Image 1: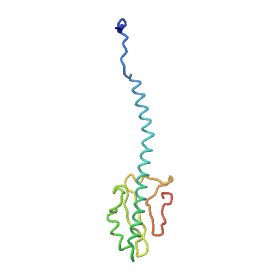
Image 2 (image 1 turned 60 degrees about the vertical axis):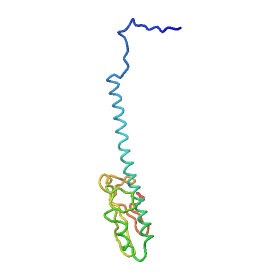
Image 3 (image 1 turned 90 degrees about the vertical axis):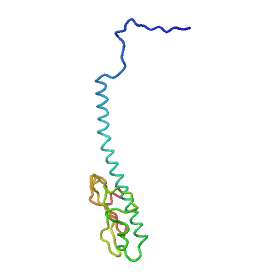
Image 4 (image 1 turned 135 degrees about the vertical axis):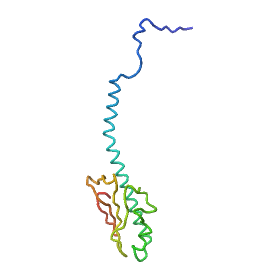
Length: 145
């Protein structure tokens, strides 16, 4: 049978495992630096994701209005968009307000106006006040599409 020898002669030099205050401060500084870099990238990603969702919804609205068109666009618009949103859209109510503009029997423009923090979104470095799509499939601002 084998015995394990333990040296207890220098017991005052026992090392306690843990972190010193300097090591802790360095770890906190590294975490702070990474957070300062990552947070703006994350918020830009969220803004872009919300913009892409509203672009998809505008396309869905266009498909719906074209599908239900009989003699007039204005007769079916209220069944698609009501109160700034549509029933089949995925856009969050606090991000964009959806509406029709220039609505007549033969013309329409679907408009999405950003709200709250979504107003900080940019397309190709340019800010925008609204995203539109009309019956001729002309989109504005073009860099957002």
